[in-house]
Image 1 (tube, rainbow, N blue to C red):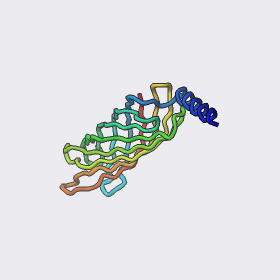
Image 2 (image 1 turned 90 degrees about the vertical axis):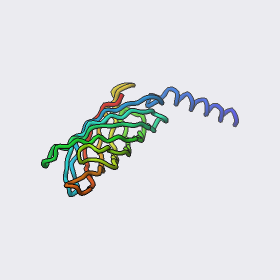
Image 3 (image 1 turned 30 degrees about the vertical axis):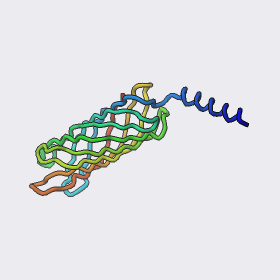
Image 4 (image 1 turned 180 degrees about the vertical axis):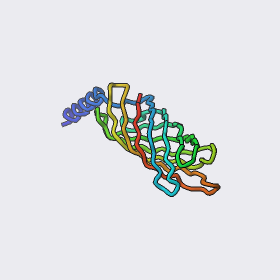
Length: 165
């Protein structure tokens, strides 16, 4: 019985060592998207974000990032520059893999957009090869904004596409 247990352990190590998937180490993302305002301010924006960090487990990525959110509609011509920490969970390491991520951070005062920043998202990762993938996703963003001197939540939902390297 002991020999069967040892054989099972050796086989499992061999299986995981040969599996083609996300290993540990550096991982980076560049995403572009469009977010539609869903609250009273109804401010939509274009997003360009970059995130860099470490794949700490085969399914868990931890990193930091920043980006530019351009608000250019409804008479608003502003830019927000959120800075955030990111946690991403990949549900498997197949060629097509669903994922979920959370970005929490702060936007320094640029024009009238500053304060707490949060993005909750999910989507599908399409692996091109061992070092590149495309990501397609949906997200919900909460960004504190000023509207005529009054503080408001800039709630948005949006789509994004990105390159992972």
